[in-house]
Image (cartoon, rainbow, N blue to C red):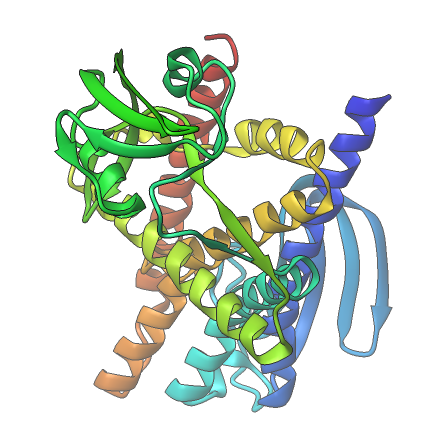
Length: 358
């Protein structure tokens, strides 16, 4: 029963992200007086679970729970529909800037949603400012620091004989020794203790390279305070930018071969992570949804045929050369993109299944 509830939470959360993404396209298309033929949650090959014609648009829910789509009149997209009359309300009839706005609107909606979620979480939960002193705020069970005997309020004096002035200098020294034996000195109730322990290792992106960093399982003292509305939105923007930059660097690391494609998480692993996150409460689940929204926006804006970014590139090319790309070439581009996306999806699904049984 609990698993079913978690599954429904995930489905509803992801459905909301998809609907808002497609709503961005819909609103931009309507603003530029472009006819929207279909607005669907989930794919509907063969038949639909629900559909209703309202004005020029067919609103529906498909049976295949993979994303969703907005079908614009006069566009060559993943539907491979070639019907185009050149009417003024067709996508083809719009100028380059209007096409780019329409195709980018879904991505913009994803990023705005992430900012709003992070801002809400900050305003609701407040901000925890880390204390700059090298004083232990929390020790995680079963990690090296716990086995060493470190406790809350212990002050770290040195690492490997090097005196540490603050939390940053202490963590830098620990990070530089992954899976290595280090010597730590700390003071508790005026009594100094020195002991050795082997660090654990955690992967971290440095630029577009994945490196190993040492860790012992401690965090600093966190000073809690309330956040105002303006500061909350500022934090929301900074967190969105941080995760967007992290996603970009992860993708660059993947392209350069510094990270294996096996590290990419697909629908199965996302469902597993979301289920675990849901157990930690709504704040954690909302944070995960903001992160997924950022990734959804980033992936969609990539210049790959079949994605929003692919349509943006085609609009740019047609705007620069001042004529339409021949229909056969557009069809070939879309078909190639669809095949590549399908192969990537299959690869990620296979990786997910393998990781489940590891």
